[in-house]
Image (cartoon, rainbow, N blue to C red; front, side):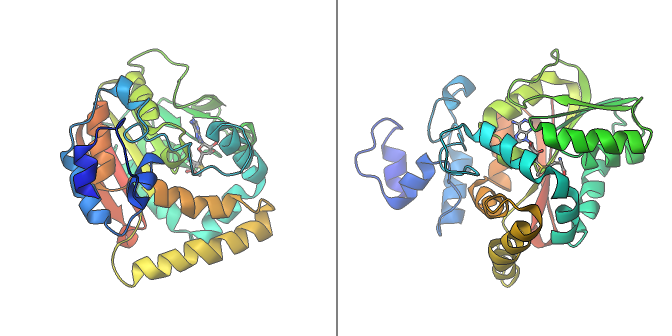
Length: 303
Ligand SMILES: C[S@@+](CC[C@H](N)C(=O)[O-])C[C@H]1O[C@@H](n2cnc3c(N)ncnc32)[C@H](O)[C@@H]1O
């Protein structure tokens, strides 16, 4: 499979194996030959970003296969609708289903910014604001702006901001990671928790975040990843494929939201593949750090 991948440029694809079909769909890391594909990916010289965005293999156009619903809307519209649907139960389910570990992950991720003490932070895919609240508590910045494509999630965030008397420091607004409503070089730091997996076009999202980051500014991304070791991998697959959708459906009333979750994690290029992508987009000094047996990971990079 790898040989044929090497020998055929993107447009000449005579016979598609199952893995190639998955790669086209952006599921590059799905297969049993995971490690081999990752190795190949690391050594591949990517085309320029503008080509990336249109390239079905390297554009990471995650919209093609893994969408929340079956309708004709774009992935972005579907993701926004899905989070609107689950916004009221999101916080409860988040902590319940992660057994509270998500709080520790957020703290660890935000501490990656202690070394630069950012004054102005952008929290992309801010949702109900939990990552930003953590940043405010740990880093005491002057200003945090949260953007998200889901009005429902932002409504919950606004209530929490008011309740905590944080409106002077933290404001939220509608905004898309792939076309952020800010000038170039605006923020000292950018944070994203459990957001990038949902982007319609990963490179475009990463590139626009890089654009609004100040030179020497730092990005911290927290995202689910795929544990590899026995028996964590098996337990994780069972939990994500059966337990999470069961409780998700029970409490959120959106049947699809919590079965989309494991699918979107599977489709996401995690670990070294993600830092390779960050480097390709233009981030420097990228690092990744595995959390809780590889269930999630922290990614950092500098502009
Ligand atoms: C799983 S929630 C995470 C929310 C929050 N960061 C947290 O840690 O709880 C993912 C959020 O990403 C948002 N999102 C997805 N794609 C986005 C995009 N292209 N631009 C901005 N937000 C996006 C969704 O609307 C949703 O609120």
